[in-house]
Length: 560
Image (tube, rainbow, N blue to C red):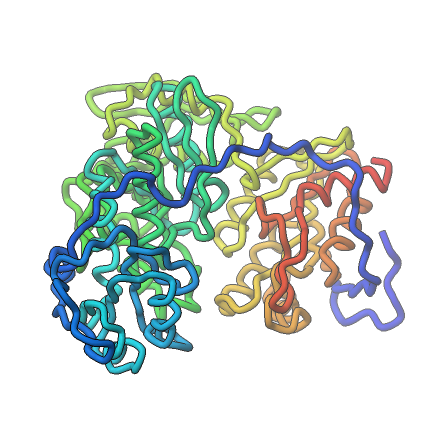
């Protein structure tokens, strides 16, 4: 351990100043073989008349006039939809929506020059010069974002009417449940699609997985419906999909038919976007209750291990319920949960009609038992026998989710995406339970910039209470001052009388090296917050950075 400096602050906090450590090249963990990428739009699209889309949107069809009369406006064929003028292709409808900094209608001229044949906008957009003089049909509605999804679904042939979409929402666990669903579908021989934070891909029996381009956990509505259509062309029958609160609040899943919706849990996050926890919950609940442009899931699976889940189950009275507490009256419960030294765990899933299914998980932690129960219940609702689903679960590992890093070192190293107070607490509790009482837990953690500030002191507190050494560092500071973000985390940590040792190292690479150097045989080093991410956002630039690679490189460098 480094000795305290002469200006060490009060308490047990040390600030370690270090120059930026050069990028490591050696010792990288082998990556998955790059997949063939499918196109971002289907190859076969049947044109849809503008008048049909106007009816679906409940919009006024108001042709532009400045460039001359629009002939046969009602039968102008549309073959694609986009929100971004720079991505317009000939035959597209350009959805010119109001934004936080600009109105999409300001870019209508660019869209028209690229081949847009119609515009969907609001009255404010209609008043913009490029729209009024467009010479193309203009669909006008007061809240156009609400109907972009249904309009896009119509253009791409209602793809989700011909496949089964399994949507998962909640604060934590979406990615893990999505991968569990995919594993169960593959085990059952189904042609599956996966849409999520880590991967977006298609897996068809007898063929190598193929990737799909995606920039968000849940893509914008036109991209999402095009993606579904591409999946359908590839033979997909079932899709496992993460559904974020942003996507539900912003109508990105409008026009999507969900065969089953699953709810994992709710804890503080995204309060930079949602004004209150109640607003956050109501956005999630949209998957089960519907809203303008979004139909509720046909069937519902709800984990009732927290109050928000119980509230949702009270609303959706036909929901299949899940709980890790055997004493709770739920459709699915877990009993005989056993954790094993190799990081696996086993339990018995108790289901309806006396069903008892043995389940093995390569994912430790009580929260992963809950995730597996949700996945098992969703797959059961999709017609996958629990025994088959459990086969798929047995060896699943999810990138950046309790991911073990083994480079021959004499301690346990883990990388995880936990970036919320409850997730940090659950992660560290799970790791603490896996190791002998003599082992120390060493945590490297930061908080993202331009995001919910209220959770920063809570994350610092949650981490220090469960760590023998907490190294506070930078995550993705984005446009904020990294030192101020760290100070907010440290304020929460320093307020805890039972805190562990604290060290502040801004440079994330140096922080990881420090944690690895501090580890003794049998200890646990956990690097949390970024998980699967392969970049660090500083200012407006994303620099290459991978926590897994950095942990391996630090182990090699320190000869552990």
